[in-house]
Image (cartoon, rainbow over all chains, first blue to last red; front, side, top):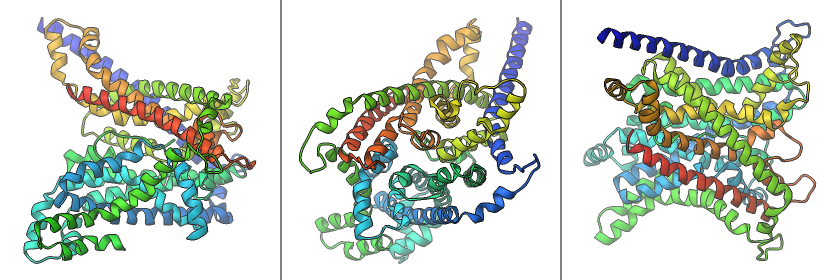
Length: 283
Length: 300
């Protein structure tokens, strides 16, 4: 009986291994070939030789350079604005207004259920007003981007604040005479530096990949320019695309490893872009 | 800026003066946040909700909603629903297989971490880039096509379907499968090996285990994931817009076209009505997803 049981288990384990190998092999084919193809395509020479011509000629497209700079600036502005808006508010709600925490959570997660294309429909008249009365700089997109990154950053920071005792820490600091600014900057922020880093990397990645809002509002950010240039010079466009994708990989894989180094048990939640239901935003 | 200083401001005036006033002054600390989301999240949503009832002259009308019955909007709704359904089911199926292959391995292994992080990138990062990846690989100048063609297999013999809806569906799978992996892994992690052992000690085989134990437990979670993937496809815009630039086969493109038409026939009110249609569908799907997720939580 026991012998029969063991042999059944062994065949099952072999079957499982075969299943796993097949699945991983197919997944590798489906996911790695398009990525490899981008590298291959962007290094193609005239007679089948390898060349970096497409890569080096990126600098000859001033519109592309401008778009890259704009997207990087937007990523920085969005991250800073998001942190300045979110971290003090979330700390304050935990300390003083716990009855508001559900409302803040609801509002922060709201953009997940409002498709970007719907949000931009409502933003369109506002941006026309903004463009004529305040500024029509592409950097004004940061106002909308802070909203887009809100759910992801909320989760990351919420996970960070949940792991420390905000109340005790700040009461201890306050009783030693620290001002609220000192409490924030010297006590809370260093303790949730991991979460802050996660939220920042996430928003940088999301902003660099953003297309919908910029395209509808007729601003030329990195992704809009990629599509635009792709119709004229696919090679250069794909070179920039693969570079931006690799950059996002490095950023987001970085999150996994930063998260994993400090708190092993929480690393999964952090790589899953915060706790709670996951949501995609690629399309 | 103003936000950073807020807690300090709130403290200076918030020291206990009178019980009632202290309570009200605490609220100053959350004012910047609510002001911001009020202007850039709630106001645009309200603009869509209210604007859908007004025409270009600013007078009240229900015409925008009546226009939803235009044949091309109706067609786009059907197309978007079908596209979302197919990519949700396909993504969920293949994603579930991949998630199961991951979960049966080492929970702290390198492979799992790598797949999970890569899934995060592909599910979150721009759809434009993903469209380009497919143009570079299976597009008419991509090496996969050139290789297949030189071996007598011309898969574009009947037209370059990469730039049609079937191509869009294929590229959607490129972010739907990773999203499924992220959504479904926690559910699979909740399955206990003891359940399998219990089935066996009671004389059940693999089929019994999946049919009566794991299947029913995972089913709500699977359907919930399908709904989430459906909503994800339904609201997607970047990928399809990068691949298809003629006609506007999906709803998100219809909205964009109605906001700022290149031929000068912009219909902002109509755009908002389509946006409302989209948000109603996505919200219904998301609510169902949340309900299913709650049901799953009972067991996992």
